[in-house]
Length: 291
Image 1 (tube, rainbow, N blue to C red):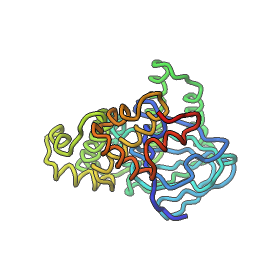
Image 2 (cartoon, rainbow, N blue to C red):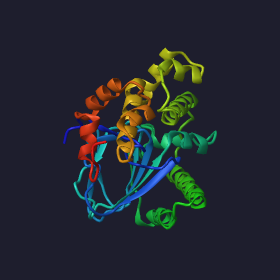
Image 3 (spheres, rainbow, N blue to C red):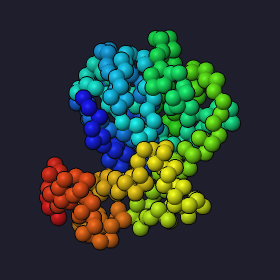
Image 4 (cartoon, rainbow, N blue to C red):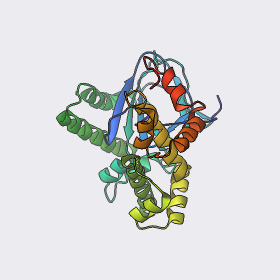
């Protein structure tokens, strides 16, 4: 399988609520991300399947067995290479980049878990005794509901999981303060874009928001993510538009809610991203009729 035309899977495209993290067990049915994709967040995957699997980072394959933990950086092309989750259970935690910064300490940079400097990257092998500790925390999360209080509890468990992973890795790498600052800035930009998709975002506006030049912000974003900031904004807007297609609102209103106040521009961007018009996309949705 070749890493061609990977898709951006953001919280918007996955219909995920606006939290600093999200967690999901994949244990039966079709693998709904059986294609190369990348995220605008970090991901930790606990592989719990009874059958061995393959994880591809780009075109580099890694053998995965029960008890392995997979670390995936944001904007890194990857795939779990099997079409069905049955026998290939995994528990995934998506983590906003800024939460890693918030949880990090002066001598405990959590971003290092996702660094090539980490000898455990991208696969950390655990024995069954070590795995039990994480299974207990995973089960705690799975038993929680969606109330605000329970989400606070879930956040504290994710915090604990990250701390345990950092301890178990026994990282002894000097702090890269410059790299950490860069990732924190990009994380802040990702959050700002997501919060302001309905606004007329521009590189100049974003650069002014953080008191940097347009050139600096553009180059830094490209270096950290491998994507241009302009392309990312368009991907996020189209992702939110797809989400809004399920609601009973006019397509022109959808365009305005994702920052397109000229329908022609929205139409062109949507068709370029999806290959079909917004109207045709909505007609293909289950149970939806053209507006």
